[in-house]
Image (cartoon, rainbow, N blue to C red; front, side, top):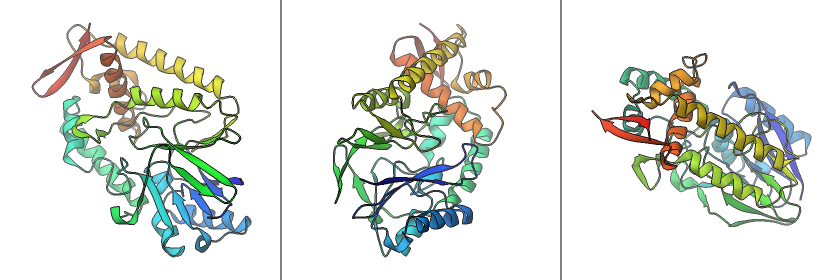
Length: 319
């Protein structure tokens, strides 16, 4: 199976996104890049270097619905005369903005985020959401855990690997234990467990960090020989990165728990102390809050801290 990585520019601090061309019948793109003129031109040029045009694409598979991964899906699909677009049904970023719904506001306010700060972050993500064209639910086909994406030269097995987002998916070619794993595994940075409503009960938070650790262990169980991530170089030593991630998460857990005082602290207050240098910069504020909430949720689930509600806000205290 011929899997060709294509590096596509993004306007985000994370840098280029990796799009994967599976040059087999049916010709498939895994992720597509953001909806910017620069990304569209780069994708078109790099496909042409491999003898492919947008109109040749028969299937678009999305690892998850963040703008840098899914933004061009509609444009490519339209030029490809209605190629299939597949994504897990728990993803929402291709349907509406990241903080667009009332449940996002409620989850943030419950975490101690002032309403003015929420509105600032919501406004920022309204602008970022312009980097993807909305797709209707009827335009999509669902990815399911353990389904097979068939090609003439073999198949890719779908692995539901929630954590970075609730519907994040990875793909394994079991013949040679090659992974394509979106933002679940990145060589040089630890993926952020993004704050999301739980797809099964939007009034609750999705337990992103706990789910991420399960997903990471599941990927490890395949003993991958090569893992293609959503950004940066491929991973050739999965054991090394697995243990590095686990150490980093354990160290972050210790720092978060050390910030939990007897008088009680909110996730918003923890985020400001944990990330003082980047807290007020663009998307970093939302990422800092997401990271802090995820670690506090995980610590609470493990019995390391307790949480009490007061005035509609969660306060964490040592157990």
